[in-house]
Length: 509
Image 1 (cartoon, rainbow, N blue to C red):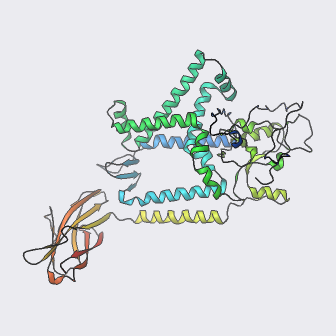
Image 2 (image 1 turned 135 degrees about the vertical axis):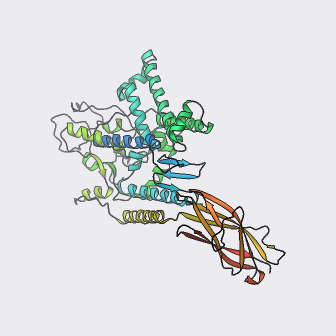
Image 3 (image 1 turned 30 degrees about the horizontal axis):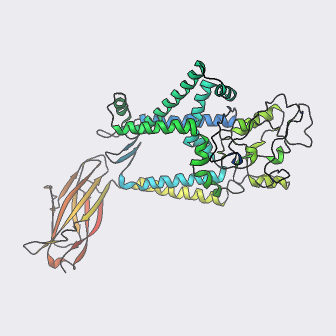
């Protein structure tokens, strides 16, 4: 970071000075802790050092509690929501039905050929992530990333059985006793139960949740369900209980990508070194002249789940969870100094303060306008196509072997596979007509019903795809050449919906 305070050898930043017989402020505990996950302290061949984050209290911690409850509630409870779609159709609100090849989301039904909606959602998610990052940094990582949410949940369990930071450190250093075994065993059993619930909730999205639950507890479910539950149980247990910050530091690519989306006006959690330096312990009643507001209590370090020191500047390891803001604000309140020594800030504001200019926060700027515009365009296009999509889709495949057949009458016959998709909630009858041939005969295998005009009528059940074999015979003189452009017109005989699909009719040279 520009203008970061440096020691005489040019290293960045300055370490906390030694107390040198200075009595720390009586209202603030000075933690004897180091940032074990800062780059210079980390080695690929070094055994991971356990991080014991202290529970933070404050505005951002409350926001994170609320987000954790909401996101976990949605994940675990959504498969149990019901949505009436009519007789014979699944009533689960959110369901990925592989056997029926459907994705149900409340009133929306997506077919396999409509996978472009999924593509659109992924594009919206990506652009939305770009917008949030360019505006307010890694808020996704700090608040809604599944790794962050589940680690928070695992830490709640850990604190419940083992206590807060100091108690957990003492417990790990203590010899194995019945009490220690009980606490550790209870914690790990609860973690495993959370993992089982996580895997169970996942498979419930792919089958009727109440039915599958009964099958699971009676050991009657498909082996695939048990496999996926076991897989999610193990990964949730390992990533949430053990890997934790290692996932963000080594496994996730996003920290290495997001830097290109930040600029000097992007907000991020920052230590305001221009206010905090020079730092050092402070004695109650001592003057604040000639020194910064940072009293080197290291409370920002002990609450950090990543094991870093925010005072080292912007770092790849920082997930911007904002817990250091809460910890620092609590200390500032105790020593009667203004809040905001650690806060959401931008590099532009650091430069403005250095020049004596007024701070400003530019949320609206070219890149955020571009991202927002892209979201609106893609979202509007998807909404339009969803609202105007037809309930009838037709596909035609012409037989390639043989290309054509010459009948004994001299007529030329082509064979086609006609696929009619009825997306409506009612059974429908469709007439099939050929456009582009003046004199032709049409026959559909397995179909005997015809219209008053002699066109075959294909019956298609609701929410189903029907594939039929169609034979079209035409007089040789009516053909334009070896290949004649034609089209199949499929019309709802009891409605107005029509779909036309182009193909060609092959004949001899």
